[in-house]
Image 1 (cartoon, rainbow, N blue to C red):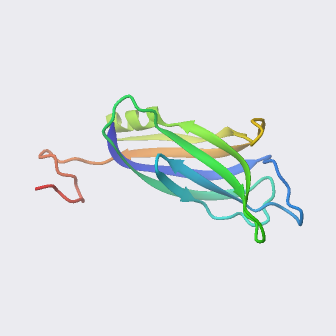
Image 2 (spheres, rainbow, N blue to C red; image 1 turned 135 degrees about the vertical axis):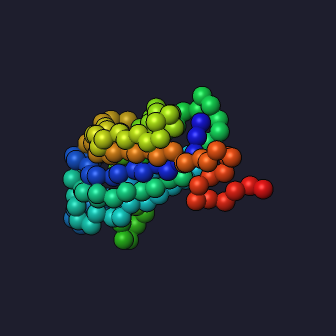
Length: 151
């Protein structure tokens, strides 16, 4: 399908489920694209409406056609004295973002809200995310600009 850089702009979340026994929740997000995972910073004492405003990068290198490309956002509550709690997750299909980005060189999906699904499969809150894919530039001889060339 293509090679390039996928930038995930993690903006914020609203109306998340969950409360901590001792106070506000401390949400963070684990973003997964295939086998790659990135973790956001923890929004300390942010409660149910955290703001991150971070960009997480993924290298895309896929030769398979007809494959679904998706991002999974697992929202967690950081706990100091126990295991972190799962607050919910959202999934975004980015197959079109990558294919249009390969065709045009770059494609941006402006930040939008995606529903958060909790462990009991109910909807509770939304996460706001934007995605940009920039295709890797290839020279005429097939070597990648700024990268290693195969000999």
